[in-house]
Amino acid sequence: MVLNELKDHQNIIQKVIDTLSGDIEAACEMIISTIKSGNKVLLAGNGGSAADAQHIAAELSGRFIKHRKALPGIALTVDTSALTAIANDYGYEHVFARQVEAYAQPGDLFIGISTSGNSPGILNAFDTATQFKCKTLGLSGRDGGKMNGKCQLNIIVPSDITARIQEMHILIGHILCKAVDDLF
Ligand SMILES: O=C(CO)[C@@H](O)[C@H](O)[C@H](O)[C@H](O)COP(=O)(O)O
Ligand SMILES: [Zn+2]
Image (tube, rainbow, N blue to C red; front, side, top):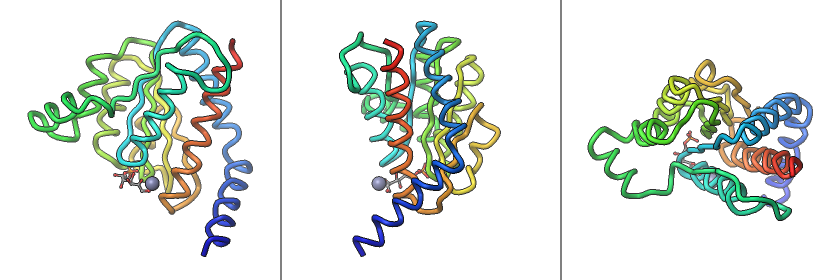
């Protein structure tokens, strides 16, 4: 079992190398231009992807590899008062969109993470981010789901296995953080 899982991970990395390098370069350009223009990065996801959103945000406000100035990365998954109030009063599918509406400025980057590409809260957040003139980047899997057409760039990890997709998402997240570190 263990060897199978490791080999499965190795296979998906090879597929990402073969098919997604160009998309990942484009995503690096999106985050670089966002930081260069003094804008911020907003992130959201559910479950393991919420953890990924927080992980990437923390690399920006804290640090990734090298010491550089603090950068504005905000995960929309962490304020339990906002999450519970919005879910309770408006419905769970609005928890991220409502926070995008609260925080987004034109030129910010919204990164939505969903392995299915179909989580309603993420789809609604893309709509609001677009309405507020943010750049929009999706990290998804399977066939990209309904995130296709909802974001400027949807990076679709070519796998149907949630765990493998998430493993590639955090790898891509770290590459984005490296691109940002290289600016300084
Ligand atoms: O981490 C995992 C599974 O590995 C789960 O917590 C998973 O993230 C949750 O089921 C999410 O609700 C799945 O949503 P999504 O990726 O389809 O948007
Ligand atoms: Zn997981």
